[in-house]
Image (tube, rainbow, N blue to C red; front, side, top):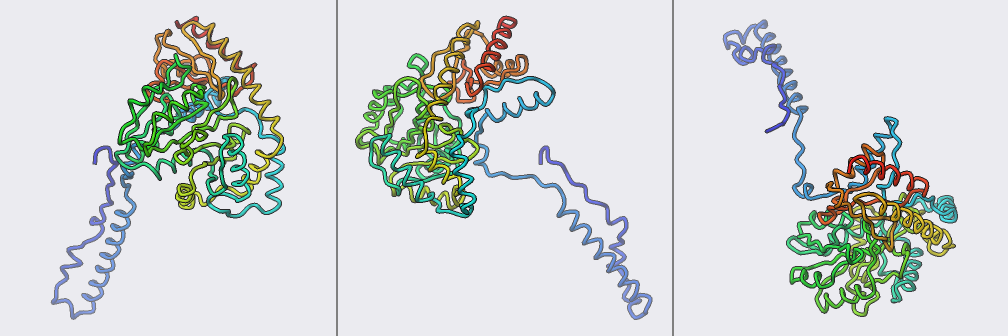
Length: 450
């Protein structure tokens, strides 16, 4: 097989006279000497065969992955992080603006609740759909924030937000179905669609619409094969926020069709201007919407791995079954901490949002002063998505140069899909001091290279 390392078995025949072992004369069979000789030769033959079998069993073999693994994508942010860490290991000073996680610590009251839960033996298996106590609290929270009635039976708690994406696509989408998803967008959407053998249909988020989708374009993309539409607001990587008129228009575009919507609202508490609107709140859309939300971004709990989905009860059951078959359950003590997160003091959330807004303002103002860069002010999340087409550099090449030459880790817009070409993503989940230092480095690089 091409490029396969071939195994050369030892030449045991050099030491094993197999012909002699098989060709012992019958005439000598009656003598003691011939009988002993025959036994020695047979023992030698058996040893040779055993050795040859062992050599065959231990030879290197090609790993044959299932074909579907070739359709599985990744998150470039983690690859850039590894490269940046490697440069730091060599003594380089790197400013990290590539990873999408809050740089704040988890609030103390949430940590204390988790520690208390550990001491109270919340260290065992729990129900696959989540602890009843947390499902009740989430149902109340979503009922209040989305102004709809949600029951605990409609809530499934999972380790992070991604399982809701994965499980929803697995449960609803079949080979040949079409799924409409935002592009540029969170790369796991397209990855999961491709993985199950469906057709990924991108809808472009347009800069001239503050990175919102054009509802008229959505109408053109919907057809009889459309099984699922994925929405994300506030949006990663652009910080775009869907307005009420957008949500209403999307609902009208779907109309009476039996199309499900996966609404990723993980950044819903991080909006700087305006307010959050969920398609789940639209009349007639609750039963066709899967709401994805969680604790990672709002409460700086990325490492805790806890998210949830809200959906009709007859879908929640098979989604919970996927949990049973994959993770069994979400860690019990983290779920107790989740109760405190939602019920406890929310000042930490307000403080983080205010600080992210300050950083956004600094970053946008600074980028707009750099040659070749232009940046709209995002209305939510903690990213900025500057247009770099006037630099004349492709996104990936520019992102690599800023890391290698300037020590600033950012992501190419193409990490979020083909429509991300011409853009970079910077996370503002870093101090204002470091953001200003990064801006100085990028500006100096631009002066030398553009």
